Image (tube, rainbow, N blue to C red; front, side, top):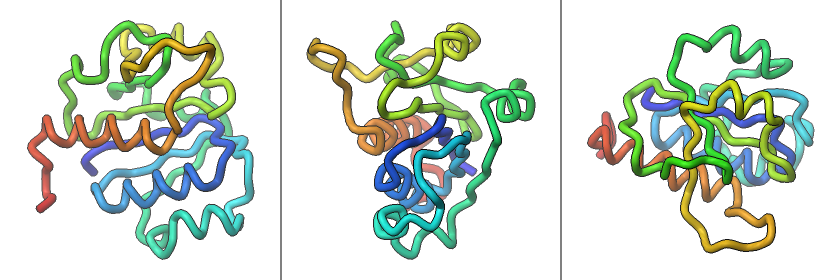
Length: 155
């Protein structure tokens, strides 16, 4: 696996489908932390993920604690508007985890505090509580990480 993309309680099936498709095409795994804001049989998830979903390495967790217990020894970056470090200021390695919060509210403070040394952000103009689309954010950061790794096993 090149990267591990983690979605904390994703709410919009189209975003998850698009991210899943990007994971397949970059040899990355998708980790979904429940509760999900949609059913896995949702037609919008299927449409966005197209026929890529069958090839996706996807893992499910009942809650953040289950995910963290299993992966706490790995490098986990959290993409958040609260991050001080730009996503381009990090040196990524194969196997890194990049977590994204739920579309409406990100992640709870305790998760940000737990991962405080690995908070990253995408620069944006200042607005009132707005941010980039989740699937766009994931693609931006994934491709920077892959660029740094010289696009392993990709042509």
